[in-house]
Image (cartoon, rainbow, N blue to C red; front, side, top):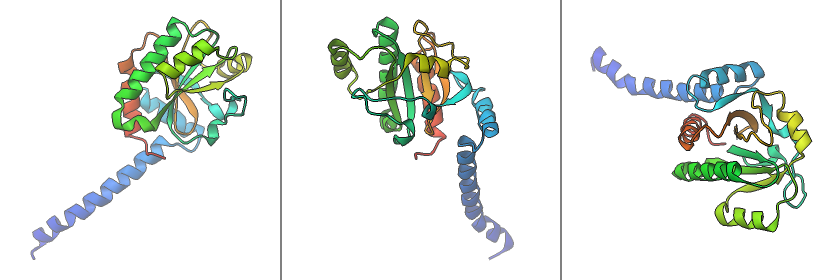
Length: 207
């Protein structure tokens, strides 16, 4: 075997090593270990994302939540997934139902990747009445419903650039580690959300 043949025969091994290293490096970048690395990640994503980067990012573990039966719903105890958080107060009227519809359609269009994403409806008002519960069960059977305190949520999200209020709805994208990192307004469409989710799912490992 001559030298040229030896070089060619070794090429696949080097390609395998390089590919393995690249995958490991991308995983490291997508799961930063400190705030500085997370800021750099958000800066990189900011060149491609369609949603608005949340500044500063928030750990959802710091927001006390409960299920509809009043039992504690701990974000950090949930199966790691990308989550679409929909915080609303009072009656779920047009803007609320539009966000629910858009998020449902986006979830469906993820096809085989639907299991990587969960939709979470955060009720910050009075307990949902029978009509609303029936609507959610009928139109959004896979939606997770949790409860939170309105004033606590205001203080939680107030320091960010989301400008959330009961009259300015936002859909918040939360990463697999429970960090709220991006948000969407009614001006965004389903394609914006779908594009970001596909990108993030593609470059993040399934935990």
